[in-house]
Image (cartoon, rainbow over all chains, first blue to last red; front, top):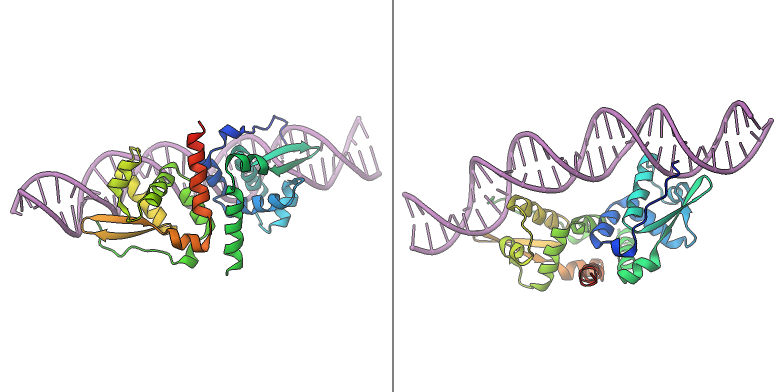
Length: 113
Length: 113
DNA sequence: TCAGTTGTCCAGGAAAACCGAACTATGTAG
DNA sequence: CTACATAGTTCGGTTTTCCTGGACAACTGA
C-alpha cells in the first residue's frame, strides 16, 4: 500500500459530469449506497463484503480511486486499512438533492422488479 | 439516413446505470438540458446549434443513439430530419425527481463559477 | 435530374476499463 | 527480530469503449 498522500478535489473541483461518470457503474453505485448508510466510513474489504460483488481487488482499488477523484468520498489511512466516507454534506451543499435522488432511483429500480 | 426502425427501450428497460452513463458526458448532458426546454422536440442540427459544441456529426449521431438506447429520448423521423424529444414524463414516473435534480446540479455548477 | 441537407455506417486509432500478478506498507505472533 | 498475514496499490497486457473522417443513403426543392 502506497504511503503517498491521497488526492481529494475541493468542492469547486467536483463536477456534475465527474459525479455522474463515477456513479455510472453498478459496483461504484452500490459502494456509494453502502457508504451512505455507514456514517463512520468503511474500509474496502468491508464495503465489498456488504455489497455482494465478486470484484477483483485491483478493480476495487480503481473504483475507490475513481470515486475519490470525483470528490464523492474521502479516504483516510487507518493503519493497514483505508477508511472511506461519503462526502455527503459537502456534495449536498454543492448539488442539493442529487445523491439522494440517484440512490432513490436505484432503490426503486431494484424493488420494482 | 438509414430507414431501419429505431429501437426504444420500454420503461422497464430503463436502468439507473444506463441513464447515468448516458448523462455522464458534457455534450449529452447539454443535449438533454436543451430538450428539457423544448417540449416539441428538436432535430440534431438545431440541438447542436443551441448548445455551442463543435462536435463532428458522426459523434452527434452516436450521442443521440446512446441517449435513445438509454431510454432518455424518443426519436422520430420527420422527412429528412430526426426529431428528438426528452421522455420526461416517463422517466419522471419511473425515477421521480432524477432528471431535474441532475439538470439543476448542472445549472448550479455553471452559475457558481 | 441535380444539388443541398440530414443523418447513419464503417474502419482506424486513441483512450479507458478490466484483471492477474507482483509489490508495498502495516500489524501481529512466536 | 523474523516470519507471516492482511489491506491496498502498481504494473502490464488484453479487451472494450469512444472519437472521428469519409463514404453512403434518404429526403427536399429547384
